[in-house]
Image (cartoon, rainbow, N blue to C red; front, top):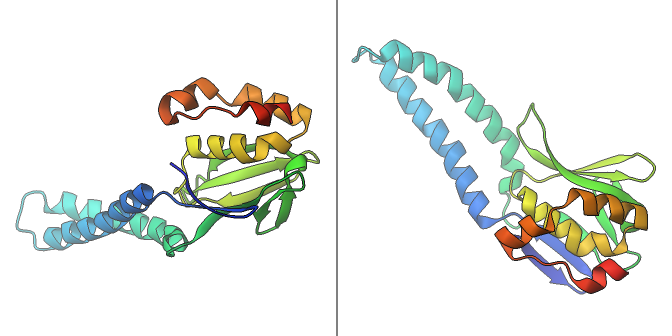
Length: 186
């Protein structure tokens, strides 16, 4: 579920509080758990001590590495995606503002190196803009965000491509989201 803050034409989308808790528990719990397993393995008080040491030595650095990449997403009140509504609306990215009329496609992609999802915006001229979501916005939430705020201002070709990509029936089943009839006529 999207965590939206709207003030006038500006929309700030923040991460889901449920995702904050789940990811924090996973990373911190994993680091604490693997530290404990490694410490217990080093006491050699069990027949499984060597397995515990191997598991701790392998998994602890991986969890610490992933947690370091996730830390910027933990900042309280961090805005993940910023939009400005309207016919001259745009999406804010670190590389610059992307007008809605220039957006050809938007999708969520996972970086295989950091395991962090990014909202990838592809413009009509082929440029790609990335917005890190820190795994705090789900794929269905991205689809709803694009369909609700960006879709009405896309070009007809981009709308046709988005209609082929998005499954509105699925979004209705899981989130009770229904496209506004006015947005498809703009």
